[in-house]
Structure formats: structure tokens, C-alpha cells
Length: 177
Image (tube, rainbow, N blue to C red; front, side, top):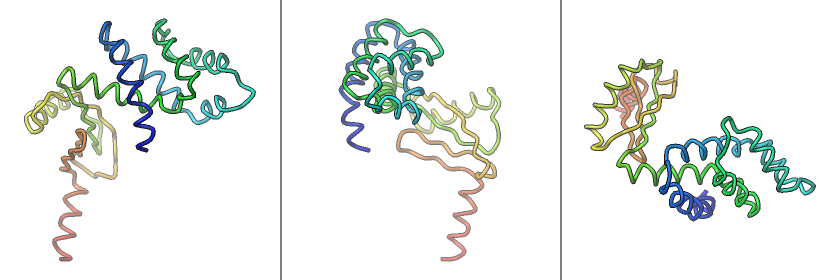
């Protein structure tokens, strides 16, 4: 949704500016936790109920977050709730991470694998992918049994698909052409 991205951009930029003066990793962790809570459909329904006050929504979110929030993070959350922008929080978190990655020269890499990948294998794969994509990567692994074997890597809008499923699809296309 382009509109949500447009709404989230100024919040993400302001948050990044404030976070740059402190510990970016701590801020990233807090924003991730808030985004995870704010993406809960039941919480959003609760927040939109006309009889629920902004303070009640704030208290519920703060009580659900795993680690205590800093005062600045609480102020940020209050601002979002007061302006009715809680629904934009996951997008704000995504844009915040994009800004953080751009500053540090790192890109997020989503690695889809049919099977779990050991840490040593992931480190070796990350080194190979960094050469391929020409930048430092932060890989996260997601299991997708439909791939049958191999991996599918998504870095931004670039995709590298070496899975058995993709190879079979290419063979099917070649045979039916």
C-alpha cells in the first residue's frame, strides 16, 4: 500500500534522526518489538474502538512488549497513538531498518531454504552471496519445504533462485515450449 508507505516515511525519518544520536541497534530492537505488537489484528481493533482511550492503548502495548521501552520510545509510541498512526508502525519499522542499513552499507537478505541451515553453512553462504550482490548482507533464514532443495535469496528487489523447484519450473517451460 503506497499510502501507508507515504504516511510512514516522515515518522521513520524522524525516528532515525533521533536514533542516530544514540544506539541504533537498541532503537531497532524497540521498533521491531513495537511493530510486532502493532501488527496484531486484535490490538488494532481494540485501538480503533471508540470507547478505548489513547492511554489504554498505550498501556496495553507497553505491557505486551518484551523489554522495557526507553522514554523516547514511549514518546514515539504516544505520538503514533495520538495521531491515529498505529497501523503504520510495521511500515515505519521497515523504513527505519532501510535507513539504518543504508547508513551502515548493509542489506537484509531473506534466505528461503527447504531445510534448516546450520550457522557455519549460513556464514559460508552469506560470504558467497556478498560477493554476488556486491554488498554486506544480514541473512535471515525462513524454511519453505516447497523448494524441495537449494535456496532462494531475496535482497531488496533482487532475487537469486537456485532451488530445485525453480529448476524444475525452468525444465518444464523448456520442454513445453
